[in-house]
Image 1 (spheres, rainbow, N blue to C red):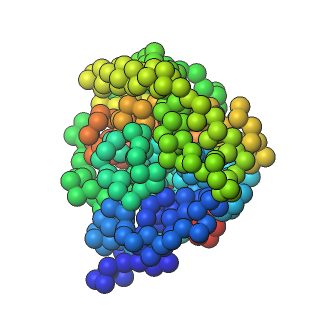
Image 2 (cartoon, rainbow, N blue to C red):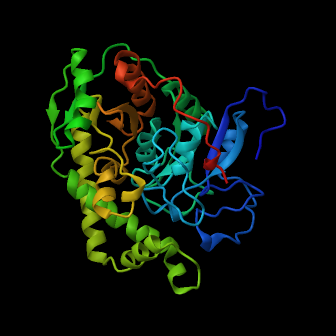
Length: 385
């Protein structure tokens, strides 16, 4: 695939696009055999149209966890993209192929969607940067499912500068910023794997930066609420497939069936938590420029562990709550002492996406552990359809 405007420059950024976004003339299959016979899209998704108008070249549609309803990236139907740096570990999901395409050097940046960590988690699994913009910042026309109160379209890249370039293409109002002083940062008081914690906190502390601890008492409730909302919304979009002969992966069929049973009372509770948690986060961001959390509580599981809920479900503990609240969040990769993937999440104020990217750039420039090496591994064509 190579799609570009007629006047596209020869050195245009190569962009890969998750297969839940429409590209005119190509079917949108959402990683599912249920849509194997989908007819070609008649028009580009708004995000794709903006990329082309900005002079980007679309080089492929990327594989994904089926229906964007899973976090491992394992897909028995469409194939599981191989994690370039850690091929025995999951690539992450649901935007697995987009993360792999960037990590393998097949794209300069890639577009994914993030409903509960689906950009940020695979970014860390593959050792690159992933950015979830503020909710509603990037228009979702031409994205699937069409309706979501959680989902955000955003970029993967190997540098913050390329993330900013991607955001300028996706959003004409986005203007990169430069910090005039060190940001006021707070770190979330929480528990996580010690190796992960050491890989994140010790390098920052070594630079002499003050980072007081803060608490988000509703974080775990926000995680559960996010699971309820995504379940109800995914059931609303794809639940009809259960009543048909449509082929679905075993994990997706069982999760969809469970989601169909979520009662209205649970959804009402989740919406109450959404309001309270958003207020809680906004309160902290009135005192600090950004909040730091681990991206993942532990290292990504092995592919052989991908079917174990105990290994997979906790992976979005620190990611999913900020889909519920709508705050922008960016993740920066680093390594544990054993050379395994780890990462830092930085959460910013709603609408302050450019400031958040500037804070992330500041981290990459001042803390050596958050500087991505020149090569993330061999090229990997399995990210493309």
